[in-house]
Length: 335
Image (cartoon, one colour):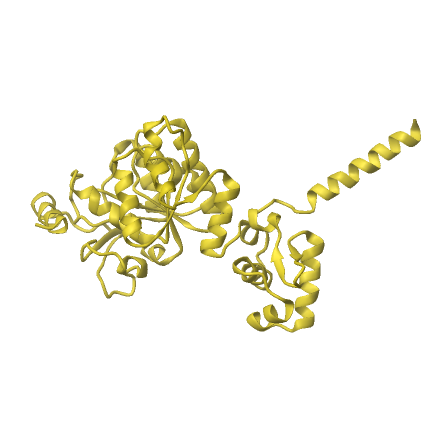
């Protein structure tokens, strides 16, 4: 019998619980049924949820890892959750102990929104120690489940849950994973769906890193620091942290976003954005002065490293250096 049918029957036997006031159910064909999930097979015919259902349709990134994580794995999960949130992505996890919870908490602390895909019914909390993670998702994001209301956690429910975690996002970040493991089964589901997989390398002597190291050997995108993570996200989602944090002006953000995916000449960029060429050239000149874009030898414009990585102020370093020169020059004169 398919796992989905077992979950349905178990929910009927256990629960018969009522849908909570902030709960909802979404079926294939409904407007709210996530387009990404439509590509995923064997996730059932109902998504039960509490919280903001529309979040399922926004750009998501799934971040998972070992439940019995090492400090190394927890640090990677925190880094991934924070950077993803600062890029404006919705962070999806399973709400489990270890890496999942660390990524969700880091995303929330950075002002981001989270989705938890639960192994029991959406109104329940499991594990209880992660109540804050579930409450945050329920208040500012959402908690999803494939199990009917009132269903308690069961081991067989988690493989189905993992397919939904993989299906919701175009990218799966694996922070730390042994081999075999539940984390690795989610990575396999993502691979089956042709999703992009990022993985952090670990020691060849650590059993906790066998899964991530194997994924890297199979072609996963390697994440070695926050720089490589930000660049990978900017490439796959066409977002940059600086665009979201520093520039609320829609026109300015559109210019930088259009250059992230591919460097462009001024006239081509003006056509894409339906702007006057003269106006765009002036804007690009201002951006060059601010250290946000650079003109390549072929005449195309591209975002600078500072723009891609979300530097707080690309000109700050130049101003500090200039200030130091003035101070040192004054000291030399007075001496």
